[in-house]
Amino acid sequence: MTAARAIAETTAVHSPVAALPQPRELAALGTVLCLYRAQDGGELAGWSRALRAEVHSGLDSDGLRASLAFHDRDGHCCWRLFLLPDSDFLAWERLASRLPAAPGNDDEGIAERLWRGLAGHLAAPQWQCSVLRLCAPSPGPGFAGHALLAASLATVSALGAAMALRIAREQAAGNAARVHECCCERAARAAADARAATLYPTVQLDTRMPS
Image 1 (spheres, helix red, strand yellow):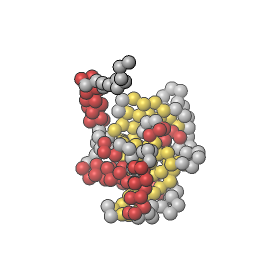
Image 2 (spheres, rainbow, N blue to C red):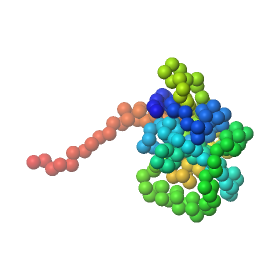
Image 3 (cartoon, rainbow, N blue to C red):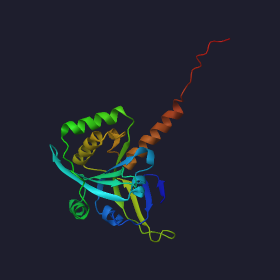
Image 4 (cartoon, rainbow, N blue to C red):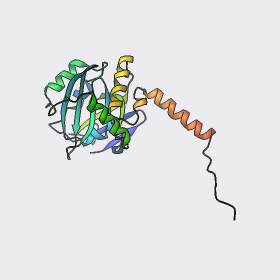
C-alpha cells in the first residue's frame, strides 16, 4: 500500500478490505474532521494502513458526538473521522448503520475527556488534525483492483469550525489551533513563514571564549 502527497491534496491507495468503508462511502460524507497520526505521514496515511473500522457515538453538552475509528493490524487506532455540522448526516447514518459499534461506545464523561487531553499535552502530541473533503477518483492504469481515496482541505461554517476546534483540543491534536485553515490560508501561512526565514535568517552566536 502506498500513499502520495501533493500540495493541498492527499491521495492514498488501499488494497480492498471488506471491513472498511468504500472510498465512495467516505466521499459521500462531505466535509469531516480528520485526525491522523503525526508520525505516520499525511492525512490519509492511517487510512492506507487500516484493516477495520467502528462507530463511536454519544451525547454531551454540545449535542451529538459521532466519529469513525479505523484500526491497523495491531489493533491500534490509526485514523479517525468526526461528524461536523457541515457533513452529510444522511450519508453518515447510512455508513454508520453497516459498521460495528465500538465496545462501550463513548460513555466517558467530561472528567475522562479532560484527563485524556491533559495526558496528551504532557506527552508528545500524537494526533494531527485537518478539516477535509474526501473524494473517490477513478483508479488509473496500474491501480486496477485497488481502492483509491483522495482528500483536500475544506472550509467550514463558523459552527463547524468551533466544533472542530473543540474536538481537536479534546483529542490533544498537536495543531488544534490551525484546524479550521483552508488550503489557501495554509499556503499563505507557509509562504509568510518562508519569507520571514529569508528576511530574518537565524543567527547562531558563538559563546566560546577566545583562546
